[in-house]
Image (tube, rainbow, N blue to C red; front, side):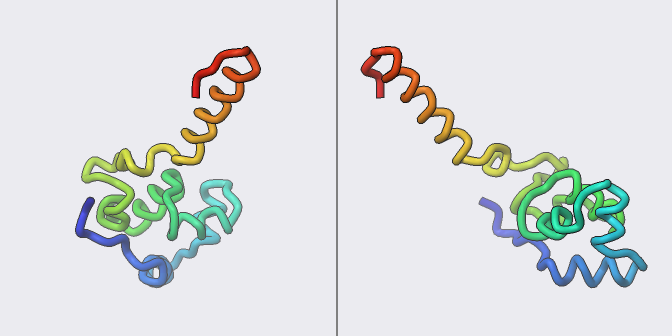
Length: 104
């Protein structure tokens, strides 16, 4: 895991304001709900994260090194929610039981 920490959300908002823009304008530009863009400061929402980085003339990795690698790709840790994977296993186990199998 990287020793680098994500940029504090207040610092990102302040930098956007210094450049004459805001999260609301980012949301409008992306045709996203403003709360979605706001959430991108605290959790990985790639399209919003990329747009914010672009407006700040930097990279997603520099702003959010915990989420993005140096190439701007999401770290494997953040590429799929673990609850989704667990849910898929539970569904498979349930189907197995319903089909008469005894897999767990």
